Length: 534
Image 1 (cartoon, rainbow, N blue to C red):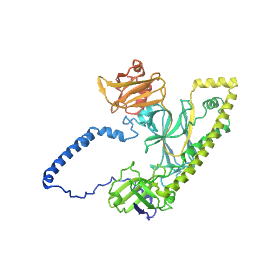
Image 2: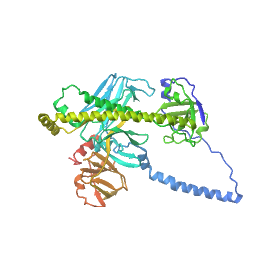
Image 3: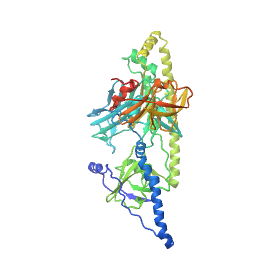
Image 4: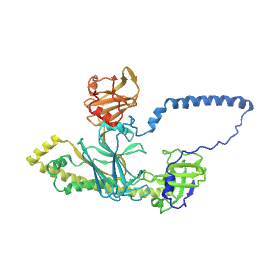
């Protein structure tokens, strides 16, 4: 295990920027020759034979598959992969010269609430301007498709597809450098959703783990109460009971983000090192003074020669993942970057685990208290709502309002930038599973297809070789990307001709001749049920 001393002065801004664009690792190491004891005759004729056999095997097993599957490997490497070049969902960019307590209104009914001193750069310095907010909403299967954001959820080995009640992506920058949210001043986001169910949950897309992370229960404002207020009491003073419920739910969301992480036991098979930390530069690492750090090879596989190198300089940076740090090692022309986290061994691990168990018990106790307060507030709102609806005039106005607008407001607070979604796992009532054959103009394709369940607001990705599973009673559309800016579709009317109980079926997809060069082109066709107009 290496012990690395960091006794350098605090880096200037120019020096920090110097290390942000890392070059690829240079592999200039030569192997050490070894003598193999063997008989002279075998050495003369056996070595060439083994070399030829090994080279042939390498070409057959490695080179040829790499050449044949080059495009497929590139596609699998990208986690968020917009399928139509140039047609990704664009961002709305909001420029703020100086950030105060600010509410950004985005039509038709989305708000973003930011606080002064609520944003910071990667070094922890507060930033109030100039600030650039980049924001986009993804509300239906067509927009999900164009964004390339995966909608599958893996929990305890069970893989599900989400049906969405609305998804947003948000980020902030200062002079093109990403900012983060100050935990004590989270950002509140509210948007209108036409899916009025209360059984959706909030998820955050962790791009490092490549999975959606459950962040809490639905944060809707009660639909009946909110619609009634919007239609009949717009000028009414804010309701203390509703404000209290919002405050409680925000507190619950904040507590969930502070859930203690268990200590990590060091893996004896991995490379470990220690740092002498400058407390003034990385105060949160002070508690890890002389703590063992372990390389996370999910980010980059360790080069076996690196532990033996006497590195000249080491730079550490915070990552988006809590308690994980990017560590950059430099020597001469060699620069390599790894992801590392603090780990413990022996007695230290036992002590840390005892502390964690105590903190986790306190966390569960506090979470239960806040959940109980939330339930009490909800019951009070439901009771008051029932009393108000006894008024027949109010009921009449309420029914009229529901006829003109069937929607609710969903609200939540975030402590990190990225992609957030209100979802629930897709469930079928009358499911049909078919082995599909995808055909366009008499040509059979083996490509990924996309099934939009419009009733459930879900997009199901159908990979080649998999069965096509769908809800018989839902309105749906299936399509496939056939070229750079071309698709072919199978409409809901086409689905109605599939025989009940069919185990296999040939899907004759209709090619769309209209070029799809932008998201507007695709969305226009999608909302017209892919009916082309001259």
